[in-house]
Image (cartoon, rainbow, N blue to C red; front, side):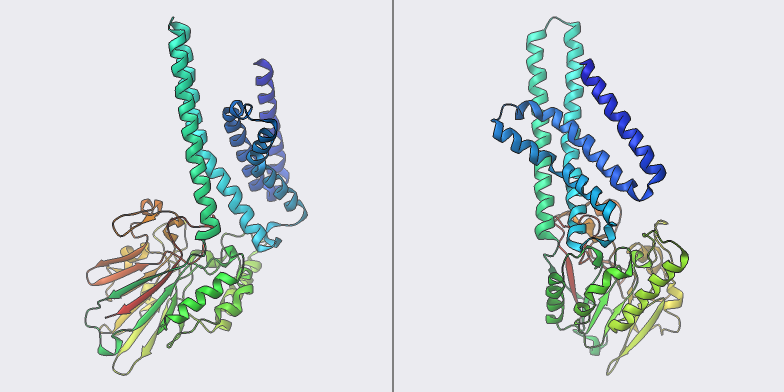
Length: 438
C-alpha cells in the first residue's frame, strides 16, 4: 500500500513540475498539456476499477483490451509530438478536426464512469469504516462488493453508450442535413409576396469541415428548393478567414432569384484567435469582407436593402452581432439598420444571436415581421420528436431552435449547418430552413 501511495505521489509531483515548466516557458502547449493530464488522470482512475476484471481475461484479450483502453492517451501523446513539429492550424483539416473530436469524445465518455466509480469508492470507504466498528463483517462485505460492482458496471455501461453515441455523431451526424419547412402567415402581406420562398442557413464554421463533398451536397439541396432569397445568418468561420478560402468555389454555386444576403456572427470577428498584433487582426477582418464581396453575397452591417417587387417592397435588414451575453460582441445597431424604412413595409431582420429578439427587436418602434437567427446550434446534442424536445441549449437560451411567435412577430432560430468544438451532432441535425410567406 505504501509503495502504491509513493508511486501515486511521485506521479502527481511529476505532473505538477512538468505543468509548471509548460505554463511558464511554453504557452503554446498549455491546452494540449492540460488535456493530456486530464485524460491520463481519468484513464488511471477508471483503469484501477476495471483492471481486476481485465486480469481474468486470457493473455491475448488482456493485451488487446489494455491497448484499446489506452489508445486515446497514445493518440494525445502523438498529437503532442505533432504540435512540436508543426502548429495545429497547419495540420491537414481532416487530421486536425478528428484529432480534437476523438480526444474530446474520450474525455466526455470517461466522465460518467469516473462519477460512478467515485461513488462506489465512497460507499466502499464508508462500509469499510462501518465494518471496522462492527462484527457484521461477512454479510456487509458481500454487500459492499456487490454495490461497488453494480455502480462500476453501470458507470462503464453508460460511458460506453456515450462513447458510441458521440462516435456515431462524428461519423454520421455531422453532415446528415435536414430541411425544416415553415409556412408563415404574415399580417397584411401584399399579394406580390405570397409564396415568397426564403432559405436560411447559418453557422457554417468552415474550419470544422473536413472535406468539400458535404458542402457540395448542401448547396445542391439548397438550390433544388428554388429560393427567392438565401439568408446566411453568421459564423462563416471558427477563428480566421483563411478557413473559408478552400470552399470559395462551392459557396459561389449558391443561387437565389433576388440574391444572397449575410451578416456576421461572433466567430467572424477573429476574437478567438491569438494575433501577434492588431494589424494582423485587422487584416484578417479585411480578408473576410473581401471574401464576401468576391462571393457576390450582400453583407449587411447595420444596414438594409429593399427588394422591389411588382406591387410591393420587401425590406431586408441586417445587424452586426448583438448579444445579451456580455461574453459576445455587442456591435449591432438596430436603429441604424432601419433608418429611413417606412412603417408600412414588410420587414425581415437578420441577427445572429437570438437573445437580440427579446432584448431589442420586440420592443422596437418599427414592427419587424420576421427575425432570423442562428448561433445556438441546438447545442448539437438533444432529442427532437413531434411530441418532445430537449437540449442542453434550452438552459442557456430561451429561444434555441425553431419557430417562436409573439405580437404578430416571428423569430426563427436555425440549428446551424456546421459544427464547432465537437465535430459531430447527436439528435440535432444540421439544418437547411425553407420558409414560405403566406
